[in-house]
Amino acid sequence: MKIINNTIRVIDYVNEKVYNRSTPESFNEYVGELISHIKTNENVRLYNTLSNSTEVISCVLDILKNKDNDKYFVSKNALIANRLLRTEKEAQNRIRRMNVDVRKGSLIQALLQENDIYFYLLAKVEHSDFVDDTDFTFKTGFSKDKKTIWKSCLIDLSNPDASVFDARIYSDTKAKYWSSDFLELQEVITDEENTINAFKSIDSVLNRTLKKNYKSDYVVVRNACISYMKNNEHIDYNNMINCVLENYVPSEIDKNKLLELKNKLYELPEKKKFDRQFNSIPKAINARIGKVYKVNTGIEVKITDSIDNIKETIAAYQDADGARYLRIKTNDEDTYNSFKLN
Image (cartoon, rainbow, N blue to C red; front, side, top):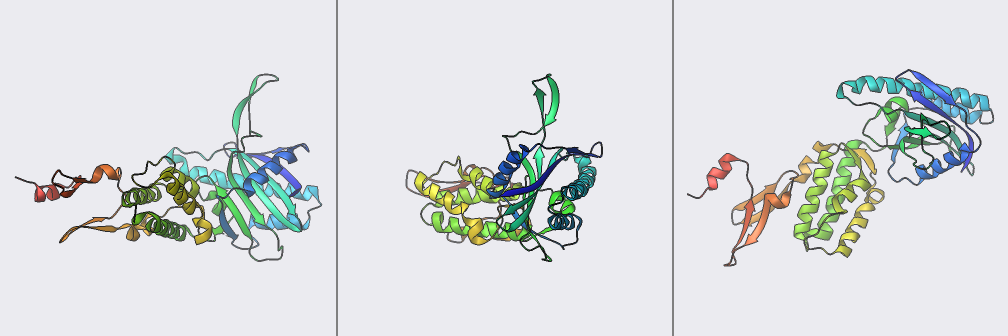
């Protein structure tokens, strides 16, 4: 991908300033590596522009029309950078009471060309402190090798006359100031749709691969997926699957089949058309969580939510005479007293 032009600016919302940094030609190498990193990142979400006249997209389209004018590129970059400054200041004012800060970093912008198609890149990269070994002073910058990207957006400009433009966004948090407030974009698939589709798809795979022959593993893995989606506001799908299965010690299923299950789950976003990154809406799956298990004639056990340490809460055992039982931990006094043996 050819880099037509690029800039980098430090966004300092504390001092309400944008610092322009000149870049040597060698900086193109870093931007090229950054682009490759972003293009191969699966954990992106698809967005559309609200119109072609919002501030950022109108600046980007003007840049494309004047792509051979370096001064024009710089001036429009400045408008976009100052919009991000205002957005971050407003976001910081909203979250100050929660003792959380918008992280300060650099905004990289670049106009790119691949064959006859143009793209526009916006990426916010990490700042970190380091010691300059020429004078041993403390300075702030970003790592060439680390590639810590907090936010990114790649806008498809294949049709400059379109009324709506597609964008691929990465964000490391659930905060929407980058996509909604700064870029003024809307999700192609809503958070609620993503939550429902992801859970339904995972549940379907677990039903087909575990439920019949590996019942114990089915209960634990399903419960872990529910727990993750209900206790994490921001879902990184790959990370969720890793957290659930990476160190899971199976009860019945062997390691090869567990790896097959993991691979099937990894493939779901593309197959079932949901994003690998979204904000979880737990109430959207509440009605789908319930599972009823037959215990004895006239007795059923219903699981209605995720359960911490499910193996410690409900377990099966068999006594010396061969009779089978369920042992269920209860924190309900009335239920306990109703079945307490004298």
